[in-house]
Length: 323
Ligand SMILES: C[S@@+](CC[C@H](N)C(=O)[O-])C[C@H]1O[C@@H](n2cnc3c(N)ncnc32)[C@H](O)[C@@H]1O
Picture 1 (tube, helix red, strand yellow):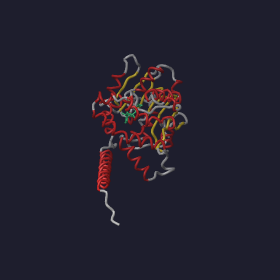
Picture 2: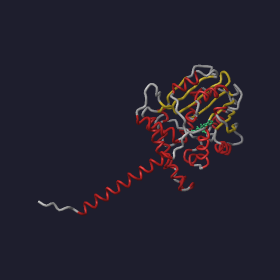
Picture 3: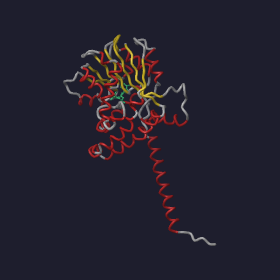
Picture 4: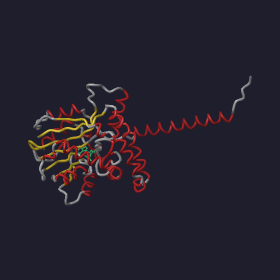
């Protein structure tokens, strides 16, 4: 029996195949472009360049507000207000780190201060005298613009690897999500503890990989870690154990170093940071179409971060000790 071919059906199948090939080609091209155009850490300048751009284009600030860190979610009930969750994070870390025991007027150094979100809360709510330092000149400029002159809070451009302060000058040290950018984690720990006075309080929050010496990453995890490092100018991630050790062996440490894992409390932040784009579409109108493309560029890294933190490859470590 002769089967009559259905020419209309064949045309449809061929068109579908062509569309599929086109879509796969476009996605492959975008992935190659995303990998090739990464912001790999070369020197500390790669970090300052990245933050200068992220600050001057205003996209991060208009979408996520004045804090460049994750939010803290007690449960899922406060989902929907990323900015409030970030402020909550600051108060939780102050409490956990013991900085709330310091009297008003205490001197606190914010290491890797961004555009000063935490520094302003520390000055306004706790009455501290805060100096924020960052490697990015644009962030210093913006932090100063955003800070009311009545606040006891100032900003300087400075490398955390080489703090321009004397030993024991500060009553408190605060550093949030700056550690992954530090090329020498021991020096980062030593410098912070050096400028902390004996008996002062240190509170650090960091993106950590799990202890890879205990459980080596598989091939997929290695590929993910590579992108997490190279897309956002990170030379390396410490594990919670290794940074605890960096602090513990510092000659300036005055107490046992305690840690906790806040992965569960901060995990919703990754999706929340993407949803902020849909909650604030006017940002893209005010900043122009290029801001939309620039924001899309960050989505794969945010999704990989969400996957890595959600699957135990990354952990949100917090560290506290006394000077
Ligand atoms: C993810 S942002 C966190 C900003 C801020 N702590 C916050 O929570 O909003 C990392 C910060 O670390 C700063 N940073 C990175 N490397 C640095 C270095 N070597 N010295 C000083 N700051 C540095 C960046 O400029 C940026 O302000």
